[in-house]
Length: 217
Ligand code: ADP
Ligand code: ZN
Image (cartoon, rainbow, N blue to C red; front, top):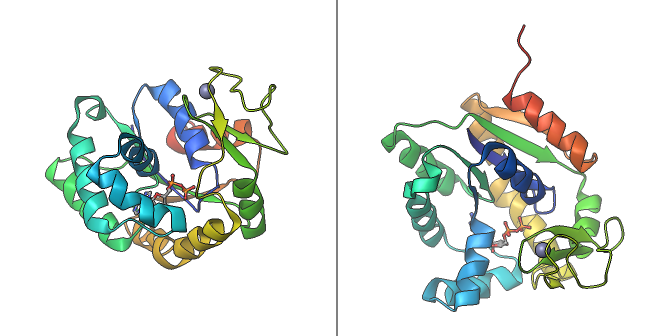
């Protein structure tokens, strides 16, 4: 199974990607997570990426494209993968098509998550994330049982440094300008499927399963 999850920050791509990892036993390839790992390690990539990320700007295409090209070659990605947060620009999408073509593989589906703008701002501003396992919480709608402690792994829960009002607004603007045009790119390849992201986690998951496993006629 080779899936691409498309949609603005906060639509729930990461949450669903984690569920799909468990179902299909294939890796989630999240460029955001990979960059945050690089920052944690203080690698040259991390140091460069942080300056962009904290302002809610995109990291330059060249850095991201080589990062993903390498990742797609890894052993665990050979039986499938879930792309989350990549591609985010037309050059990235074209580079991905190129890589897939070289590897003689194709995406099975591109799922376009949709949530109204004002709800995205709320979701992101109220978002908390577990530092250890990545579980996503929401201060209002889905708080952890114990303050600052993950229900799943007891890890520390924190707020991402780009989940400030200012960076959020920037990220949503960048999404509209740079990433939303990818819908037409994948539509013209006949791969795009619309998904309503404004439903419960379970309902969204069921919708995704219906998209990738269409009922037999
Ligand atoms: P979100 O989707 O909530 O904005 P991500 O974790 O996917 O969060 O990305 C966080 C930041 O990492 C982005 O704002 C951007 O700076 C950088 N980033 C992640 N993926 C890409 C990408 N494919 N191209 C450029 N920058 C990226
Ligand atoms: Zn956790």
